[in-house]
Length: 146
Image (tube, rainbow, N blue to C red; front, side, top):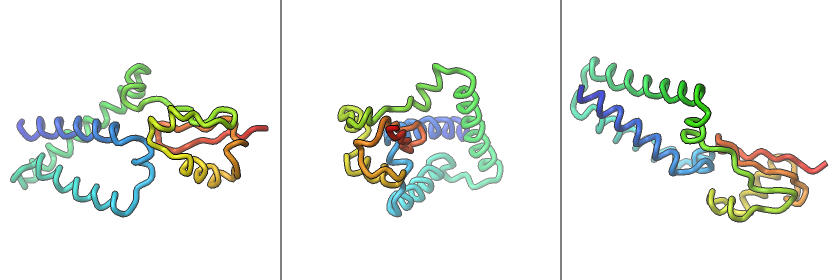
């Protein structure tokens, strides 16, 4: 039972950690970020299983985390109010070519990053953007002016 409780605590902590990190950081992993995730995974494993290397311990820990993810997914699907808490809402970054500085700063983005993402969407100037929205996935959607 101790293993299950540690897995639940770990799941809650990791979910909170990913929400605090922000959308953009999770969508653009650099090599160093990947290494940190691998190291974090090892640390998490040690924290959940401690010195229990049994197959039963593995099944309990992995099963608990999988069930927690399924529960969060179901709650996210079923209840709109829970969805906004778990996933957040899309955030408008540009409106009619004007960068909304407050929203951009809140998401820790720079104008340079916005311009780079616009170029990747075949838009050469932010003035040509009707809407730019930071989606809950961390991607930026651009709607060009007509």
